[in-house]
Image 1 (cartoon, one colour):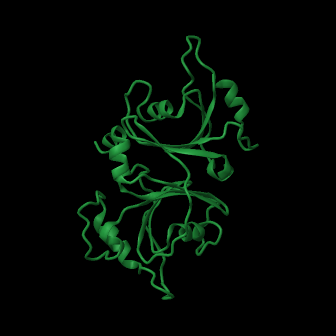
Image 2: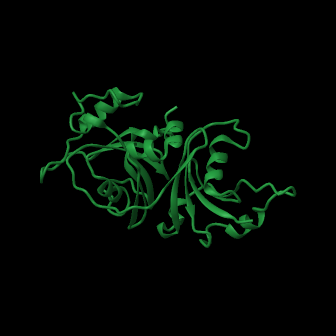
Image 3: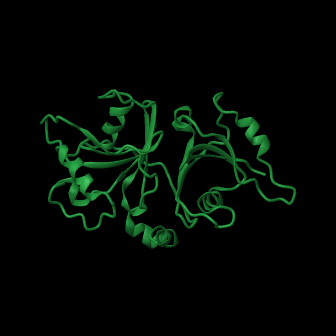
Length: 260
């Protein structure tokens, strides 16, 4: 039986499984008997990927169906420092599974650097799970904590998603936030007000501010602004999210499941 390799973000782990992506997502989010519920996000990893840091061959040997033919759901290969040992070239589709087991696959898109003048909200997914506001665009934000760190904080690799701020992106003090489901609105406004949107060559005294040092990795899928970013060293790629209309029209079952 085929052995798939998956890089999970909730939690960070490299996993071998006999299950194809959709069934793996269902199992990972709901359990084998639908007894638990929770979002899961994971990348499919190239089956020929190997790195001496991981004992992948042994995991594959153990990833065999049961005597009755039941596929092996999961063999954990590593739960520590996974992303930094994964080249971006080994990553395939990104899958988003709802707490009810419906899975949506995202393809890698074109990364277009943007230099905007709005504020951003970033949820770090791996190797840390901090929630950060910033006046840096996604590419510059990634560089500021990896290849060209502006502070003492530095990561060898990083995966993160940008979340919606609505009017707070341009007016954190008075902007309307009626559509934002965050439970920490007052703290979020205060953090955003410390920053200034970048405009032209005007210098900024502070470009990023921590909202939560350790934040839940689960977030409303409907709040994804543009998509997911994952990089290792100088290699950064982008997985664009479908807009709400596309999700309603073409992936209605997933969309309804994501918003229950």
